[in-house]
Amino acid sequence: MLRIGWVMTALVVLFLLGASVAPKLTGAAAALDALAALAWPSRHLLLLGVLELACDVLYAVPRTAPLGAVLLTGYIGGAIASHLRAGSPLFTHTLFGVYLALFAWAALLLRDPELRRYLARRLTASRAGP
Image (cartoon, rainbow, N blue to C red):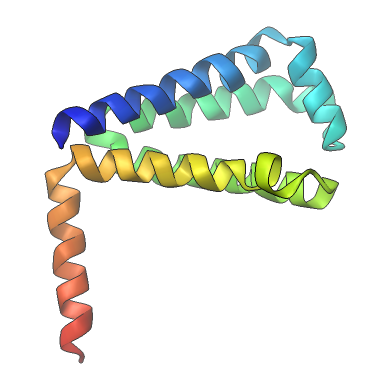
């Protein structure tokens, strides 16, 4: 499980770095066009790239991975909301963030036994009632 979790984590981080962070940090035309399609001002491109890079780094480092996953989920949630507002195609654009966030959380659960134990305790406690 641990090895699969790390492979999945690497896939998430490498995908985000290559397909999302790098174009934003370099000011690539594809990133500028994507922002324009979502009615975001281009002046926010660098800030979005830096924020996403910070979330990716926090997610990749074992000690800060849960925080990184929460922040990355929030960042992705903003992208989902932007796509929804812009009327982007539902399954390919709008819900892609949901697929990515689920994959990232599954990877974290597979690589973090402490998080699995915590969730198991919480689920057991919620079934026991007050």
